[in-house]
Length: 70
Image (tube, rainbow, N blue to C red; front, side, top):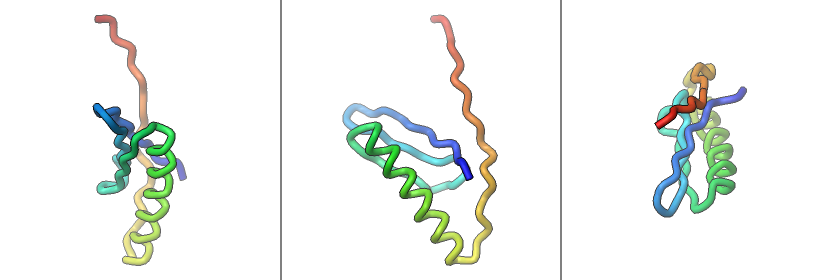
């Protein structure tokens, strides 16, 4: 499955979250690291949901980049 991941750049780090998996987040100093960590976080998150007998959400969120002239 492929889940949409939102990556935000902060003053000194990057944060990542998965809209279809509430609570699934990662933070790292570099974009490369946060991408690796969020992939691991998704795997662990889904494993925990399975252990708890919860239904795994089907990915529903889509992402689009919209260019705006300012």
